[in-house]
Image (cartoon, rainbow over all chains, first blue to last red; front, side, top):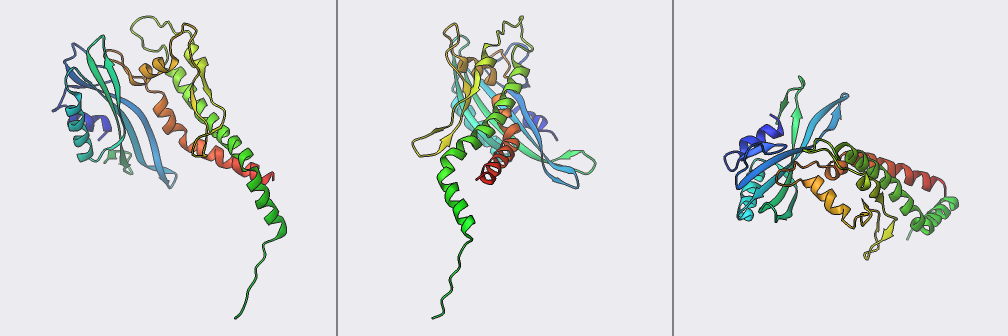
Length: 118
Length: 143
């Protein structure tokens, strides 16, 4: 399973989620996933053993973003994601959205056949 | 009561003493070597995102990229040396480079984020540590 698949499965019951940019007419609250880094770690026999992926979750909300932030944080921690940063970016006066960013990462084992499993 | 006395070689003791005296000269050199590695990665990441995949034709002037640089090594209030990778201010039109960099890094409603700073930190960490270790060894060997 990839980090984007897992995040989509985890967060889509909470809010509409899309990767890269939100297509169509955006609702008052939505999430955008932006992949940031993929790196190999811990090598053995000239092969990487782990794939560490990091994704930025951008929360856009016209309402109370704090409750959503807590809800998403709890879900991520419950699913064993590592949260590397949480930051209030600001209120966009022209659009009326609060913007909050949560950076998270997860380490996936690389199986001998190069299929990925958590 | 038996008594044992051990003496370190004289040249080794002199080297340790000289290393202590030169710490304030060596640390800035080591930090600047590491900072350059991070700066190069940030520059490369910024070049790859600025003006790309824009809704309308890009009006990028290259000012943001040219404003990116490395600060001199300075000591903070706790006595630690620091170098910083960042943007010189202000822009020619009086605006802020940091504000534009922030919008690029985090995006906005309707504008996708194009992270370049956070990935650079992850991507350059190992290379930066190795470069600083090599530079420190070079400086220590030169004493």
